[in-house]
Image (cartoon, rainbow, N blue to C red):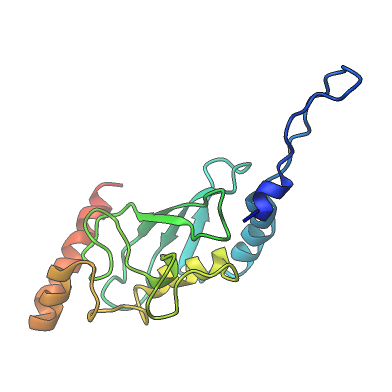
Length: 184
């Protein structure tokens, strides 16, 4: 199957007249999409989020900071690295939590359990080419409120603690928030 990405790439060939012409560097589909989507994402950021591009010419890599203003994680600032691969929008961005936290859907290694970040998902809420970067941002932000899932956890220990002792769970969350503030 020919993908649009391959179709747009131009192979370097020598013309029949013997004159070598430098190939024109084509802009990838990902980069074309990102120009529009990054602008849209910035215009629709939740008030609890901010985005930082280390290199403003490289739209495929950025850090998202989520600072929940309610719930268990209120008062914390959680950083996520977002990398958009060349196969975007056929596959989701790669996201990793850079801040250690106590959360049922984020493990201590920074892996995230969020259906829209999966290529395929049983709940039909996985990645689809119609999704955009703003959906990823809103999804990550919602992990601290309405998408919080104790029934299908990645960090089983955190979910079990919540079910058995909510006060202890809250205390552990605050412990991690305090530790992350001390590292800044």
